[in-house]
Image (cartoon, rainbow, N blue to C red; front, top):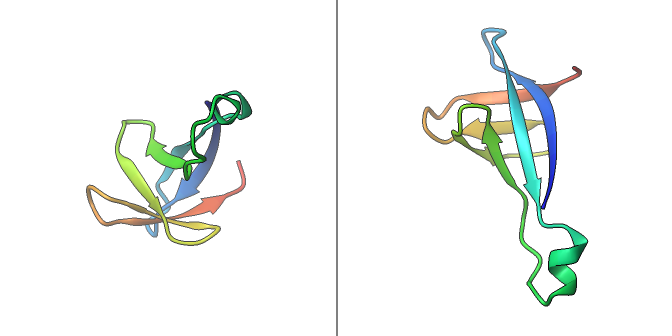
Length: 69
């Protein structure tokens, strides 16, 4: 599994870091089906991707937008 982290910001200007977890090529080589990446906040809250730059925190319903680090 590979991991990537980026920064997002809500409407009030509060920033958070979102971790993207993807299956790597080794898992695919062992016959596992490709899975969509999962998104998680630093505190473990699950996040849903809306589009390329917009994400929704599932626990609160808040939307955050990806920003440059």
